[in-house]
Image 1 (cartoon, rainbow, N blue to C red):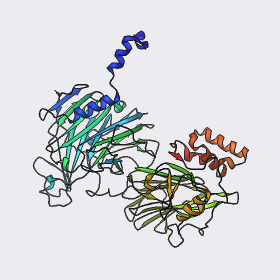
Image 2 (image 1 turned 90 degrees about the vertical axis):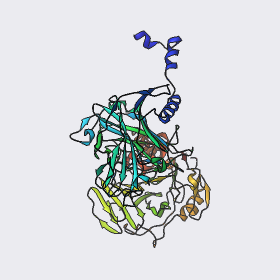
Image 3 (image 1 turned 120 degrees about the vertical axis):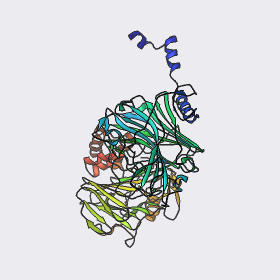
Image 4 (image 1 turned 60 degrees about the vertical axis):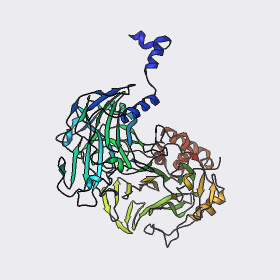
Length: 592
């Protein structure tokens, strides 16, 4: 046997390689087989490369529901967003036009996953390898709501692979959200909602969570028919559904993830678990999906989102994002930062230094979300640098400001929050963990303020991407090679020193009468550095010492100069802001 394993050339090796289909061939087959009509409303299986269904075992799905999130139909979720995945806090793919007729959920990468548990069928104590893979539609206008007295009634469809720890089942669950009347015949009651299952579920061999990378779920909704297909490697298990809510006429957003096995429960992964999720949609076009920071199921897992999400790669159209046990970020579709002294990293991936002082617009969207920072000079020790001393966000009529101290202000009033969550007017939620504050609005737009001893590191997340962002963290038309002044003047990167500070930067200053940072201590001190100041301008001994700190911390080469400058000007702890950070798309600083 050892000799066979060591063979690397010749006919045997060639045959072995030929027997393994390419990823592209697998994906093509999976798309074709999942959309292939089923002979009858039974259960079927197929194995690559066959494009024909064979009879397989059926079972009746559990009556226990995979519950919806707490939300008004067709609107954002209500109540505090969890700091974990699920219960409305998720990343989903929205069709740029038309309706989705097929979606596929899969995992590009699974690492460190050794265990998961949840209550089986949403009942009782957690059991190992009890979990669900859910591919969910949004809440949509449905003809099935015709008999409902509630104009808010919406249809909802879940394409599910559920496992109770011993057996797996692939089936569909249908909902009439806000039906608000006695449920129709064949439907079960859940509060003011109604739900029912597909007539059958396809039996799937039990899959330990360690095999998650080989699992994917495909949901198809056509006029007059629907189906779900669960793939285990190169084998497919499928059933035709009952098409009870006519999703083909309303499905616009697809959510996919791994959750607890029903009942609103959580799937608990082991520490160190990390997943990269891909949600692929077919809607008749080739343009990338719109990412939306919302979900629809009430089940959760104990993972949190990594920032920023990895770039999407084929197959598509798709969104791709990472979740793990080490982060504590809410869901965001795009991510920008202003950290250290101060290094700007825009939503489109441009990195550039900005060392002016005063109040500035960091991000402004067309939906009433605005983020501002107060930057103060590093004088007298470092007069050509600046740091964030105070940051704030406005959403609608609600403002939240975080300052050194740390101090929290809500609508101008000093507010106490020792830890945990605080719901404030306008559907905004503030979460504090240590000296890190996260502020999230109902649309999923957010800021994360890490309050350090000397400065505040700012991260900004957006609930929809692509979108238009203006300010120091925006790029016109999301073009990473350009920056735009408030009056619309566009500059190619890198900017001259004069354009950066006296034209572009000056245009984004906020006057004292308009700033949302009025609660911050002290007067606004407007200033401009006398010259550029980078890591190479540090005294040699200090630069070498600071760089050594960054190297020991494992900072990516692309961030080494930024990290070195921050460690020298601030302290060694500043290096932590760069740990694990993906490199920028473009360095916008002048060549040093």
